[in-house]
Amino acid sequence: MLGVVTDVADPASVARLAERVIDEYGAVHVMCNNAGVGPFGSIAEMTLDDWDFVLRVNLQGVVNGVHAFLPHLERNPDWGHVVNTSSLAALIMPQLAGAYVASKAAVLGLTEVLAAELRASGSRVGATVLLPGTVRTNIRHSLRHRGPVEASGLYELDLAERRPDARFIEPEEVGAMVLEAIRCDRLYVLTHPELLPLVTERHARLLASGAAPTTPGR
Image (cartoon, rainbow, N blue to C red):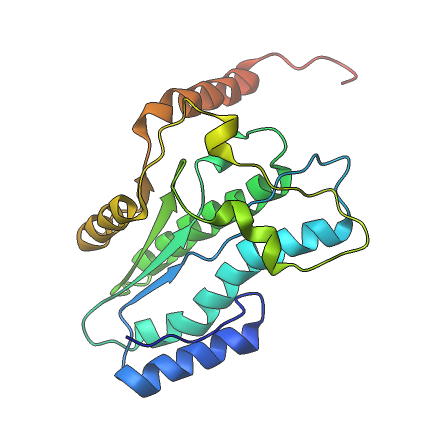
């Protein structure tokens, strides 16, 4: 096993990781963009530096990973796969998670377009977007990676305490779901199907708004 310290928000750092992997193993078949931060904060109170911190890791980190690794995956004579971690939060929009939701919604859209483009080009590379609910990880401590700042509207919450009714699953369970999705070339992985009614409600509101008559002057 090879461990390489990498700053996903730095494209040069991610490019060095890709080169190191190729030098060590000769090829790469699966690339998982899973690094993420998840602090809370109201949109009204967040600073521009707060936005930059979340978006650079959660969105630009995925862009950097795809940019650095996709050419290597495309060179494989057999197959390759990209896995990008979004979140169910991108579909159910919890309050106090505006930056997180914005970044994860972008990752969802990026992966959907990537998958469509790969299929259209006849590529042997597939793409999967992981949409996890509550998973037992250390993301609640993500602000430790930022360091001290003069002003910030971000803070950390323990979701296990805030939502005692939530069903937390272990990372190993998610890993098994992702592995199955890669084997089946499945686009979406949702870890908490019991939350799908909330997604359905959102889509119903979208469809209803499209069918509603337009109010003059609005």
